Amino acid sequence: MKVEDRGWRIENRMRPLVLLLSTLVASLSTLFGLSTLHAEDRVTVRTETGSGQAVLTGSVIDWNGERLRMKAGDDVREFDASRVADVVSPRLATHVAGLKALSEGRADEAHASLTKALAE
Image (tube, rainbow, N blue to C red; front, side):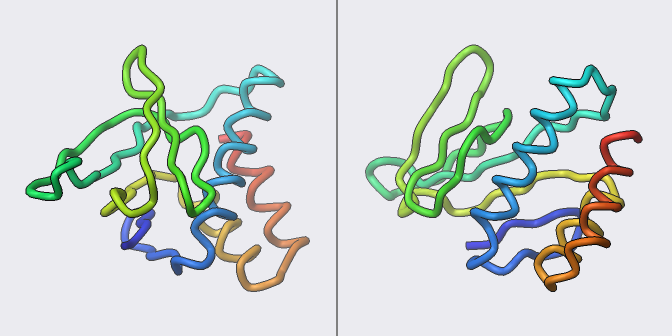
């Protein structure tokens, strides 16, 4: 399974942290009335029978590595991790840089980049 941000692949072990931070950035943006570009997340899930896949678009609400919750249209859907084949979540370049800095342990640089991403 992979999570992708415009060509930058996030290691599976970092996936829950990255999506948590993505949700936090979006929440802070909404809370403070900041305008951000919004592109929908794209989640590929295996069908319940395992014979095919479906691609859903919407917003990932939570992804803890065991279950994924996403808002697709007016519905909130949940999927076990075993059914999640792929997650693509578009981000601004500054957002990607901030998440990468965070994953590399550079907290001050990550904070600066993520704060800048909120203002864009």
